Image (cartoon, rainbow, N blue to C red; front, side):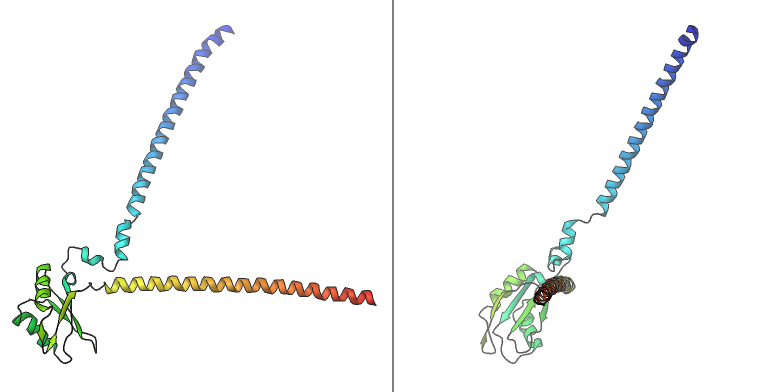
Length: 209
């Protein structure tokens, strides 16, 4: 019996040791697999998360000015004090032929307006136009010229205005729902008070009888 015990104990200990090593190895492999999955998930999450600056630019109607594409809106001026009667062709001829300013675009004014927007290809051209036009007399009218703000991107502006409108509508709907809920609560309180009042009157009548 003692021989069997002595013989079996090393075998059992060897088996336990081998089993422990196998368990440790499996745990290490599982941990590595878990870390890899987390790493992959992190990469995927980082790829799916939008850049906040991109989202900000999408909602900014003037973000197009910072792009590499050329836009003459960067170099725009406003000319005021224009005569009552003149043609856009006459104004272009004054700017480009007589004064040699090289305007890129002339935006027709609104009806009844004595102001017009003119765009140029560079900051230097705009500065030359401001110097030449400010105080210039044309058709007995003294013109004034100043730097004008670029026009917003119409698509971005429309989208942003729509978002603002939807937000206001949601707030109004929330307020209406709150008012409706408040009216319901007040009605329940009134009904309970009326019920108590009628019950009190019934008790009084029953006592009198």
